[in-house]
Length: 233
Image (tube, rainbow, N blue to C red; front, side, top):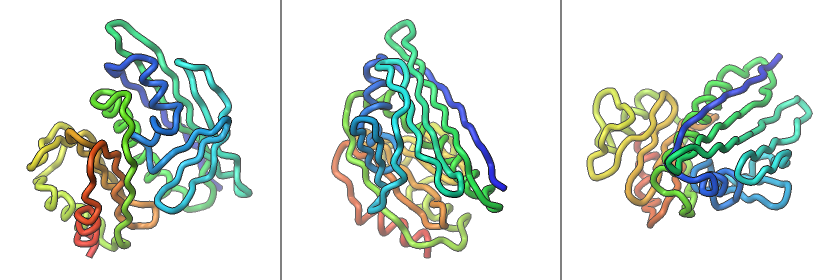
């Protein structure tokens, strides 16, 4: 047993097709909004997450300025993930970007993984949109920090919000004390945009809390590591 899945997301951004293409089809561009650091080398796409490499993807479609697609090879259990991006220029110098994430999750316990993947897909697409709206053409430094395993997620999540000065029901558009604005939130993730970065806290697949940032300036890694440790304790 397992689950085939497909998630379709779409947004119009105030960036030209060339800038969108750079963001979705090059290593520095993808690294500026997606998880970890990505390299695009010929027909191979590789993404590191911390010290580990995710399964490499093989590029299947390259239509510069229009369409880019790649997919990991199916594993022995049938697992794979495929990504497709479509770019369409519209009036006033803006662009519609569409993302399709699909694949197969094996096993009897696919439901939890599917929920985490769906949540993460929404977060990262929203980060792509935020990047294209506020940092188009710039290359970020990806920063990944792993916290300890979390037994009580609601309590840990509340501590993260408290540490950032957020109170009550947090929504996209809420200001963050000390600077910044919440650009995305759901049950598994929180995204904050400041003048020098896109800062994200995520619930990891195996219960750990993770900071996954795209930084355009200095990063106080010790501060974020301490925040994760205190929240998970």
